[in-house]
Length: 292
Length: 306
Image (cartoon, rainbow over all chains, first blue to last red; front, side, top):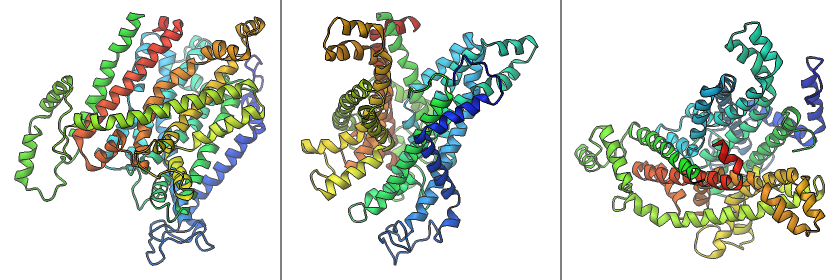
């Protein structure tokens, strides 16, 4: 994608990017793995005959077998089932919190960059100050004080992640503001609101997509981190952080309870990071071909 | 330069004040006091305890008292451990966490810089792909995955190292790797990226043309300029090492501040959490300012912008 080339056809930018992304084997592998994992989590009730919360204390922990593909945990629950349902929670938190961060960060950054001047410097100063605050610690306190509420978790994590998004969007908008199509829009008397939301934001869509794919793993990491400490998702709900925590506590006797959740979670992060890197190479004009 | 440093230090005050205020009110306005879960206490006893800790006064008065004590460096008593003050608990646990954090940071810097330099010298060869592949693995293996797996392999299967504890020197190995590896990975990627930008520059060619040894060219000329992004990463890295220590100290049963914070969170020991947060916030904010000042020293352009 070269910026000097005039964009003759409307779809050429997206088509070019897709062509470039397709050449990146790691990114495509990541995409395929993610689609499989998300589809499997979404279809969890169809893929497994077991319930994620029903205990079978008589059975107890058994090794992986044909009946229980990944074995069962200390309460006799099927690990494969818990893993699928855990994926639901983790992906849901990842996506919802990222949407929250987009809803705050994109308009904030766009307005700050477009209006510029004093408004911009005040708005960015606020972001700078918030950025230096120890937010992970604040989220932990929030979870302790107000109970371990999953909706609160979305909101709190999203409220941290928007800062990065706002900064990136602002930088892009600052550059776009000088371009001819924005000046034309001003000349024909379009309102500020219209210019920001219908002219500028569609043009930063590529960057938004890139940083969304990079934000989701961050958020999932945070959810897993909190659940691992026992401050996130609560049993009998399932989450990958909880499964890793439970697995780690009994790993001496039942190592399979640790290994498969740890592998699945790492694989997810791997796929998302490779896909994010690939998308960045393909869509972000600041990262030209061949550099990563 | 002195003006720049003073300005950065002055900016710390509002950030700290905002953090402390948010946490203070969040904790005090929460449903349920610290003693409501003690079923064995009579209403009378709870009232007396509340009076003793000043919890019966209006919240703004409590806030004022807390800030006043804070200025004197007094973080108050702990609810859970009545005989000890939060200051004592911090004094006892901070050295442990400091040692763990500093070792992890040192590990991250040494491994990360070396791997990044090695990779940048022959881009897109095995020498590049191998360390960068390992770095990607490091980023995708968060401490709570890596830690238990390391314990499983080296502590339980091979029995080379203790699975937990903080007594002998060899007890340091696994926690430090667990805490530091993600940062080593980030640093190696940053180093590689900025080295690739610096290496084709004219002054590097000049240095080579002068007949300097390759080692001198890389470490004295290229690395010095390639270090900027690594230095600016040290601010967020410190914050990350502090939060990472919650997990690592819990996994390895290390008697540091991180584990204390997690225990305090479970016991709803509000004064202890509040005190630790104030201390953590101070550390993070101070380190961010130090990094800014260091960047200003390394790159005069940044001083002008500020």
